[in-house]
Amino acid sequence: MPGVIGPAAEWLAKHGIKATGSDTNTFDQIVRGPNSLARPAHMILLFQSLIQIIVVLNLEELTAAGIEEFFVCSYAVEVDRGNRISSATSGSGRGDVA
Image (cartoon, rainbow, N blue to C red):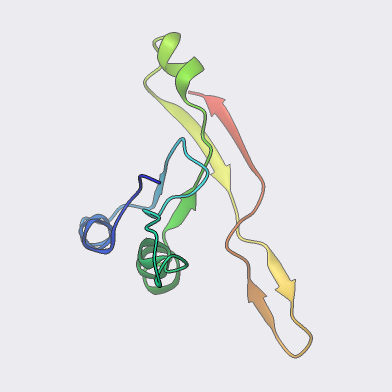
């Protein structure tokens, strides 16, 4: 599955982005083999840099309509894991054309 690899995620974080995303159902590049569950882009962006990752953006309709700017509102969801509350890696979002 195509996607972002670790060095690309480091580059994005270094350049100060606040959020990123893709039209695919996963953000990281998925490779077959013993490390197929590794998600370095998620580790670098979400957990180390607190940068939101949004997947399945479905931007084709916006592109077809010639829309170049839009607004997305997203937030982290707190999950009670029994002994502690932590942030989940996804939450609801709503996009509006700017």
